[in-house]
Length: 77
Image (cartoon, rainbow, N blue to C red):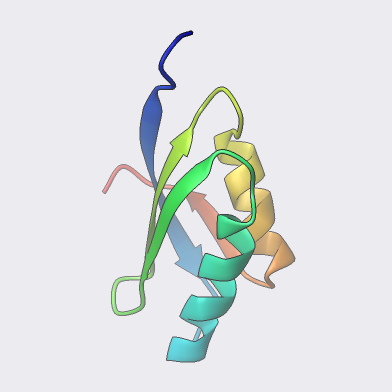
């Protein structure tokens, strides 16, 4: 049995204007198999995600944010 490798991904989001949007994004991204933790920072429009990169890709994460109704892109900070 091999241990899964957790990857920490940062996304920069656009289009959310209220704190309730945070819960919507966290719920949608958190549904993906392989996502361990999702934290949306409303003030900085940053989304931090810990996930198994073998099970869920960055593109999958961006697509989940889009499904919640928002735009996101990978960010270095």
